[in-house]
Image (tube, rainbow, N blue to C red; front, side, top):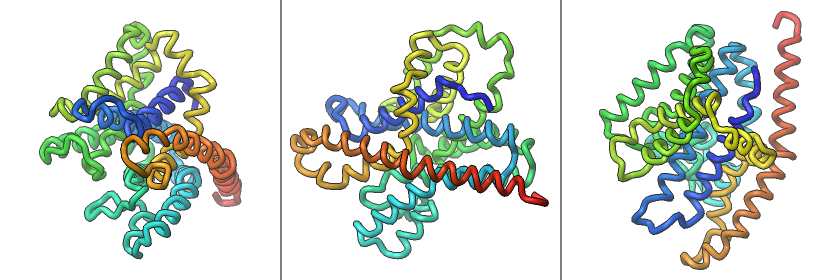
Length: 323
């Protein structure tokens, strides 16, 4: 699978939008910019996840290899954070189990203080298991139903009035839109090159607008705006955007983005995020420094080694007699 450099920038932008929405004052509360920024970041993040996972499965529909690599990527840090939260919150067994099994976002929700944002990991892991089951049953051809599932989830959202939600059946269309994008990229030939370079920027603005609470029904199109913004940027982004999104800083932030996501709210639930509004914002530089430091250490000392271990296990399995 060929690496697409511009996606690093989108991943970096997604986590920075989420962190800004959760931790920084983006104007008076009545403007609703914090919620719009965070929701936009999550929509882009989910788009990238659906795109990359579907591309992997389309090129290599090996369910065991996929699950080994994904679980070694996600579980170590997620479980470490969840266990820390279980201890800090004195959580009961049902809450601990719901989080460790990635179903805490489903009703009745059992997300813990400091780990409310981990609902998104629940949606991610449930998607991993769902797409693995689909490919196990139908092979790579089964991926063709993902666009239909995406539209079906959006229809459910409309019928249930769920403009934004943490329940999987009301949010997974953001991942499925990215999956649909993976199936469409490269299907239009040279016609893609004729698309205007301003198109990804316009679609990003529409994603921001659709993520704002005051735009109402436009929010049902958020998954499609985000996927279209990412998709068109692959073939029609202006040179300055390509350079910025493929730069070393963007690649670095993208590399540590998962850990940044886990740690930023975890630390915000500690002394670093305590006090009245003025005190909290005075501590923000410390909170950001601690988050980036912990994310760097986690990525280099935990995640990279565990990812490498998962790849070695998967390769040994593939080389084993009878595999």
